Image 1: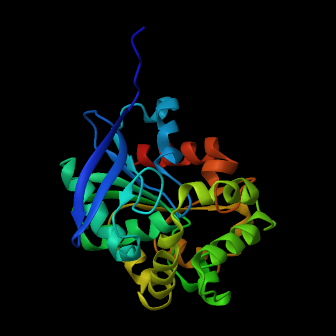
Image 2 (image 1 turned 180 degrees about the horizontal axis):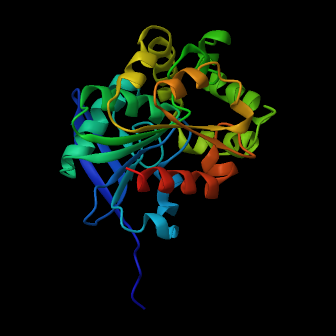
Length: 269
């Protein structure tokens, strides 16, 4: 029986800042401008594989990959991983696929990485869907735990972090927590979290986000409707997409609403 492959799985050998990587990616070819997806902390490229299930997005090629320290991607030096390192990795992967111009979708950690990518390479980014990616200090409700709960033992910190997340009163918290140990290398956690906190506190992310000239959408769960900056970014031309029955993880809590919002946003560009 011949397999019907709706996307391709590939591995890319690369080097970033002298660190050897073997990146696991999924992609689909096509004639339209592609969508590049960057997943969040504790997630993987498969968060976005269901794009192939949605007819409204059938004409879009796409690329998604596991960030270093996550999923099936191998990184030879986990201590080197930070948001700047993930930004350089994104550049390497995008250049490998020869993507000159693309739509960008990023969630949480991936949203922060995507923001920096769009800021540094504005001529390449056709649009940006920011799914609760960090743009203000208040967004570090997960990553700031590396400061709030100091722990020298990396494994103990990660285990305790997972337990705290498991019992958070938010949609999909327990589901998300259940796979964290399987999807993230423990030695990568501190570098990712500390760089996220530093950039959120001092990186002038709001100005970078508002300053992007491409069409922008900020997606958030209804449980996070109290984010202090929603009116500000709306007033500066950012489309808001509130996902019902959802917290920080629309791809787990309400994926149909997430995909509908992405498709509707892209259809208007």
